[in-house]
Length: 212
Image (cartoon, rainbow, N blue to C red; front, side, top):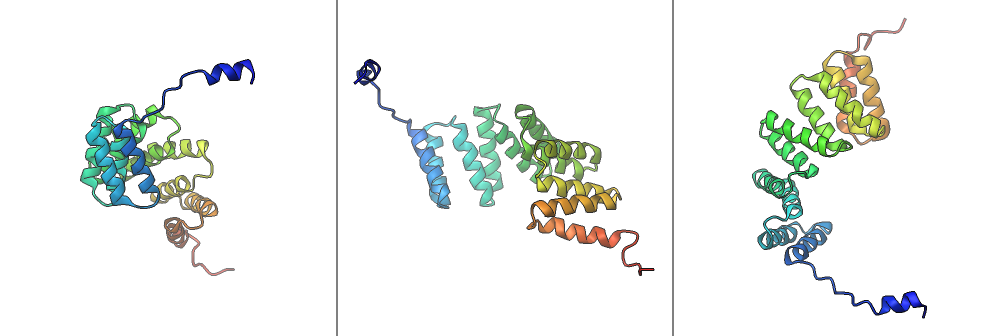
């Protein structure tokens, strides 16, 4: 063999041994991939017991708890993830979502904005913040966020749809129609966009008028 290969052959490589927490965390991911949610939750619990500061384990535990409808537990784990890793953008976004569900818009907004600050390309956090602002009738701020999302990803169907919602709420029905149509062109299965498009079309001034 060559000199380089011979040198490598004599380097004493130490075997990789994951920590107990990491081992349980990866077992949890494997269980989650095959929809064994209870087993995944059990492995994540073992992971955080072995290492209470395992932010990834808390984050995934929160996600799976939320999927099961256990939102109080989900928020507790997102907050634990943030204590361990304050700059985790996904944990901020997910915590923001849970706070928004609870009706605490101010705290939700802080988390969403922090997520975007940490990751300026975080489309989901931008959309979530846009929805939160639109519910407070802060339409101009919401539109700015939808515009940012579409600059990053022009094929983001949900951003077109939610922008359509804002346009509809503010009486700009023709523009709302265009947004809903774009959303459906990108994602035909968006039933919300389809329903809202039908409502807006019926509300247009010339809807139902007989042709000349």
